[in-house]
Amino acid sequence: MISATEFKQALQSWASGVTIVTTHSEQHGLQGMTVSAFSSVSADPALILCCVNGTADTIAGIDASQCFAVNVLAATQQNASSQFAGGCSYEERFTNNPWHTAVTGSPLLSESLMSLDCKLIEKVQAGSHWILIGEVQACESRDGEPLLYYRAGYHELAIHDDT
Ligand SMILES: Cc1cc2nc3c(=O)[nH]c(=O)nc-3n(C[C@H](O)[C@H](O)[C@H](O)COP(=O)(O)O)c2cc1C
Image 1 (cartoon, rainbow, N blue to C red):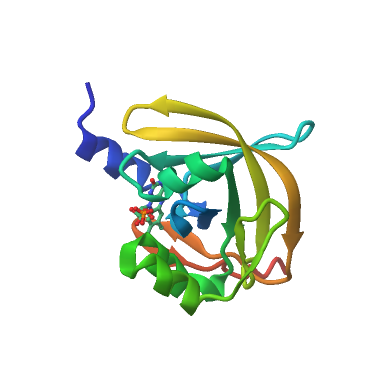
Image 2: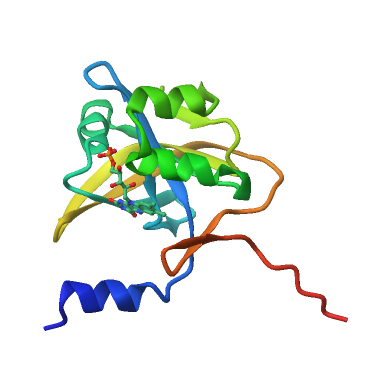
């Protein structure tokens, strides 16, 4: 059996984008956390998934609201990624980063490249994590470049000259 250290080291070769998963509930207020484990699942119906550690406090809010938003970060949002990864309190995360309210009530981060407003349709336990499957109710996009994560560091797209 592979060790957790070996597994994490191998997975560092996987380059990804960075998202912040947000929610709002009466019980827990505004919550959000940085998540790179995100994937599109199906176009019709429009489904996505993300994988969230069972220890994350944001899970309690998603359980309560049954809704969440996935905000795909722009290259300019590296600070937001660090803040929503535990760098500061929930209150500060939402004071420092402009947001507005989605149809479902989830907060959408206004400077994100793209935001998906989702209803939670299934929550599957897998090891230490929950796989959250969301049905996309609405989405919004902006121009810009994505924030990338690779080998435990942030990166931006390189411009390749094809000539
Ligand atoms: C770039 C990056 C990607 C992350 N991806 C995930 C992820 O996919 N799933 C996860 O559970 N935590 C991930 N984390 C860690 C969580 O953002 C962090 O533990 C967060 O503070 C937990 O949420 P909470 O504040 O609601 O407890 C990531 C952190 C960083 C910096």
